[in-house]
Amino acid sequence: MEISLLTWNLFHGRDAPPDRSLLTAGSRLLGRTERNATHVQVNRDLYPEFAALLRGASWDVALLQECPPRWTAPLARDCGAEAHRVLTSRNWFAPLTGWIAARNPDLIASWDGGCNAILARRAAGSVRARGSLLLRRWPERRAMAFTTLGCGLSVACLHLSQVETLARAELEAAARTAQRWSEGGPLVLGGDFNLRGRDDAFAQLADRTGIEGVTGPNEIDHLLTRGARVVRRRRWSPSERELSEDGLALRLSDHSPVELTIEMDG
Image (tube, rainbow, N blue to C red):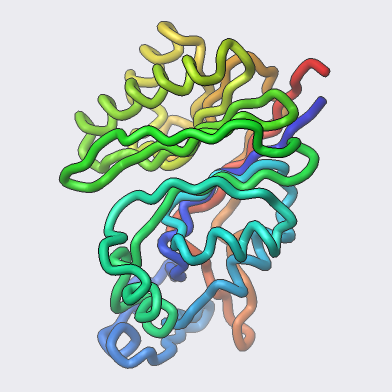
């Protein structure tokens, strides 16, 4: 049985052109669209664009970070999936911040609030168990979303701290708990780790737990596995997360999705 997974940091539903000079004050304050010869930068609600890209992608389970909480239910519906989410940071003033973000996402940026979300399509089976683990309260709330699916796979979705020492401690706590909750079954631990694949924290984790499989030495988005055979692993190119806007490229998020296909018994 093959299961395909995808992890993607949604950048709070914003676009991220490769030419950072397009991120002007006029765009951020006034919502003005900026252009160069190849790309466009917009400041508007991009839910339809993100939903279309996710809906058309080939996955059975999607792990999303920096996902606006208000997007979780619509994304699940539009992608034909069941959702489990865990709130992360800066959600204190929702739904007011969500109202602002829908009108000027670049102005409010991460203050829209966020969550880690797991979407499971029918091929992966229904969500049999849900869990959440608070990894850190301060300086940014970090939490793990956990599910066990009908196919027998357990999935944990993370977005770890940007400070290396904090991220290492969070990874250890998350892996230890996910391993216990998975009860010896196949496990995928994925998301935005804010740790490069060359960090020895991953080698140490593999030695202790058998959870392994970084995307690459310079990548921070990973889908680690235990108890399943890896069939394919691939990071999208930046152009694969681009859509056409008035003949130019609109690049969604500042992260590229990472795909993983695993094979399980049964």
